[in-house]
Amino acid sequence: MLTVEKIGGTSMSQFHDVLYNIVIGKRKEGEFYNRVFVVSAYNNVTNWLLEHKKTNEPGVYQKFLNSEDYKADLDKVCQKLISINEGLENVGLQLSEANEFITNRVEQAKTMLSSLSKVLASGYVNAHDIHLAAREILASIGEAHSAWNSTNIINNKGIHAKFVDLCGFDDNEALTIDERITKEFSGIDFKNVICVATGYTKGTEGIMRVFDRGYSEVTFSKAAVDIKADEAVIHKEYHLSSADPNIVGVENCVPVGLTNYIIADQLADIGMEAIHPKAAKPLELSGINIRIKNTFDPDHIGTLISKNYVSPDARVEIVSGSKKMLAIEIHDPLMVSEVGYDAQIMTYFQKYNISYVLKSTNANSITMVIWENNASEKLLEELKQNFYQVTGVPVALVCAMGTNIATPGFLYRAAKALYENNINIECYAQSIMQVNMQFVVKREHYEKAIIALNQALCN
Image (cartoon, rainbow, N blue to C red; front, side, top):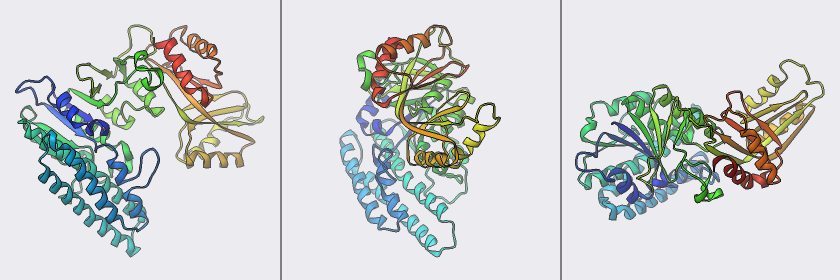
């Protein structure tokens, strides 16, 4: 069976476990191959190069944007990458070769960035495009570093491995992302080699321009489709579980086991990505199943996501949600029976590139729940200036999801569990498809609501 397997940054930073749990495992001689690994940068490396994904703490990229001494900062990152190399020497990394590779790659990046700076200074180009090009160059460094190291270590264990560099640093070919993936994987005898590919792929459309920080999963997805993989595997530091074990306790949740792409989309919509939604679609359309596995529990079969799976038994598979939501309610006595009223609202959502996660209406009110961030605050202020009465309330969203919950009783049990824990449902939504019950609750009730729903619906 030919598989394409994605390894995330947290797992990569514990490469000893990746090596012996995933790459080698319990396989015997001759059983190591027919696998392509698409690897992320080691934990925090992309944060250092760009900006911190959660806190927005600036990295090298911000220095470049501000025309500051980005080269000095890039040199500091390079030293951190060399320190990572030193920690991998005992796993089998050839340190001198690894340090030479990453030093050369950083020097190449500095040369490219210097050229971009000069072009930018001319004033004859679109600054936005130059900035995005710099972002692409910086992002690629982390994946090149981890992929080269992994290939070197695997080869040093006597297993034939090939470094598939999709970063395109050494050519100026105007290839799309798909074309580059096809080119780099063509002619490889997968039966006799493990491929380790960079999670970053250079393409004329700009993989970060289109997908931003979800780019490694997009490379993973496109590679799986291109080589017609039998299965796509994602290795994470945790199981895809019935609820967050950090909230409900490890003993109170179980791996989901089986679910479908519709549920994966529901998870992505609330920020709990099993896989980036734009990465999932090509796999779904190609009929390739995704398996989510725990790097540190290699003997467990994990959770299989397929296109047509529906649980034979009515059950809630996952309880999840987010505290970082904002409920915007627009009330207008003149809204009733006015055709297209919400179309007016959506022009402002489109202006700020914001989509809602939940929408609930009555005769003269529309409530939409969105992610709370800087853009949402600006949207709220403009809505207040243009509509009769607008309220913005920080809330939490808690969801109960399953492939087979369109049956009497689930909503009753969920509402009863929240009631018994003195949690008011501020707002609620469910579509006719009935795969996701969405409950809006006060933020301070989020953890308690997750525990209550998990206990009532999953255990």
